[in-house]
Image 1: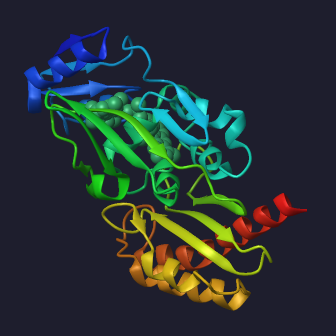
Image 2: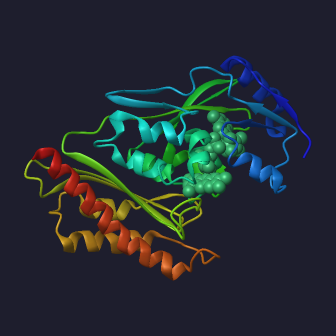
Length: 290
Ligand SMILES: Cc1cc2nc3c(=O)[nH]c(=O)nc-3n(C[C@H](O)[C@H](O)[C@H](O)COP(=O)(O)OP(=O)(O)OC[C@H]3O[C@@H](n4cnc5c(N)ncnc54)[C@H](O)[C@@H]3O)c2cc1C
C-alpha cells in the first residue's frame, strides 16, 4: 500500500488537491472504511488527502434547521443534547455504529460517501429529508441525500468534490423519530437490517400527517419505503395500519442472502421492525404531548 499523504489546512486547499488528483485521490476522514478498503486492496488511491486539519467541518448547528459538518463523529451525534428529544433516531443510529473506537473517529460524511447499504446513520438522515452539500473546483452544489445515493458504494459525488455538510429542516410539532438495528452481535457488527422512521401526527395524536420510513441492508442502497409512507399518511395509526405499512415496506425490499442472513430472514426482520419503529414514534409524540 503506497500512497502520498496530504494534510491541507483550509477548505480551499483541500478542494484544490481534490481537483488535482481526481480519481487518483481519496479524502480521509476517520479512516474506518477507507483504510480497511485500502488494506484489502479494494481501493488503491495514489494520494490520500486528510481532512483533519481543515477547520469548521466538525460543527453541529441546531437552531431550527440542523447542519452537520461532514467531520461530525458518531460520538458527537450521540452526545449532542438537542438530539436527545425528537431527533432521538440520530442518537440511536450513531450509538450502534461499531465499537467506541470506531464511533470516536468515524464521521457522518464518511458514512454517507462510503454508501454502504448497511450504513446506520444514513437511513435516519433519509427520514429527515436531508440534503448534502459538496464543494468542488466548480463551486458548491446541494443534492437531496436520496438522489446522492446511487448504489452500493456509489454516490453522485464527483471525484474532485468534497462533502462539506448535511442539512435538514427542524421537525414540525407532534413529530418524532426512531431507529432500530438488527445485527448478529451487539457491537462491532454492521446491520443485518436497520429501519428508521419519522412520523408527524395530527392534534388528536391518532392520525398520521406525514410518514417517513427508510430501510438499510435490504437493497443495493438504503431505501425509502415510499408506498408504505403514502399508505400511512392521513390514516389512523392502528395496529392494523402499521402492519399494512410493514407489508408494503417489505414488498419494496430486494435483499440478498449472504453470510449474515438469508434474504427471507431480512424480509421477516423488516416486517417486524417497521411496526416497532412506527409504534415507538407514536409513543414519543404522545409523550411530548403529555
Ligand atoms: C470495526 C468496524 C465496525 C463498523 N461498524 C459499523 C456499523 O455498525 N454501522 C455503520 O454504519 N458503519 C460501520 N462501520 C463503517 C464506518 O465506521 C462508518 O461508515 C463511518 O461513518 C465511516 O466514516 P469515516 O470518517 O471513518 O470514513 P473514511 O473511512 O475516512 O471515509 C469513507 C469514504 O468516504 C470518503 N470520504 C470521507 N469523508 C469525505 C468527505 N467529507 N468528502 C468526500 N469524501 C469523503 C473517503 O474517501 C472514503 O471513500 C464500521 C467500521 C469498522 C472498522
